[in-house]
Image 1 (cartoon, rainbow, N blue to C red):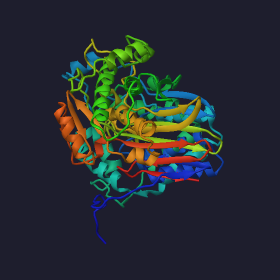
Image 2: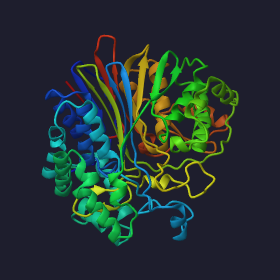
Image 3: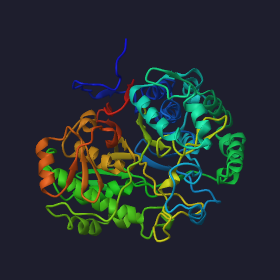
Length: 533
């Protein structure tokens, strides 16, 4: 029987997921099941998040891996905790070194954009702080997927094929990527079984040593040796000195709810600024032209401000809280007119991230995100380990005047952001929309769909999205009503309708209602699933 797994000629509908003992929502069904398995073993939401995240490095390597970064917002009861596990540029890497090799901007592939991986350290930090099961138990499902293999799902296979076209055109330094991810000389197809014994052994080492092997043991030594032999910049000292950072989440009040994001170096601040601008207005209709217009214009102002200042928090020219000051937000709001206005910043489009949300029967919830940045990342895979190194450093600037200027030991402006919603000091739940610079735009739209328009979690994700690109250019999904498209064009927006919805992000939501019942939504634009108990 032959059919196209990416062809869906007829409308389809997902319904909201409902449970009261636990829920895991993410972009791969197998990873969601891994988290649910942990909940049924007696683990809590953090245990489930770590297990799901580990499984995602195996079952969705097109977007994340052991060589990437991670962020989390954790609700343990009514208390919120933030974790920034993004790694800095290696100490040997400078802007002068990059420019000396003939580059006027940061390359996307090879060693130049590789930064210290933070994913594994993030898992360990969460597990040590809040976990209730052993690390070996949490990583067991991921190890099994890697060792025994699994069949590729449709969106995963499509992304793998696109990545193969990119990495197969690179030089011999990408031979290990081809050996691991295209073992038959071609990318695996939908339904084809793929396995990675190297990845399984690496996960076993991480479990046995509680992460020490990755930063101060055998795996760290392998990464060091690989970089040294291939003119890379990452060294053992960069890995051994890395520690995740516990941070205080930032919030803004929006129509009776508090929306929480992590502080810079992440771009969650952009979503908060935009919502803070919009809070002064009431929105009665989602499908009204003024709703779309004001959303887009507020986002432009927020992104312009964010791109100008977001970097390592200690290196920012202003404190993040200053950008959430009501007077500052009012001044931005006053700049919005009845027509589209060109901003000062241009937004890149590349992305590759996974997001997951978990909730347990004890009242705990986790918003977690990890990424290799652009798809598989730099294209470099540490031989014999399955560790695909991220290319987060591609976001650095080589202009000394820019806030995000590349410096040794500095963390870059980060696109991946977990979100959280509370009301009257009580958790409502985690949410996120992965997808590069689409992420704060997705957060804005999901929050408004929920708070202003009363959409359930699934409908809030199903709703058509828009994406601002640059100047006055905005993409609208095909399902945006035609009268909105025409009216936005009359207001001066340069409207385009892409063939694919792939660029509009992939989201997950779990809300807990006043009865303690969990309501979840999962992204219809990819292979997402909500596993419930």
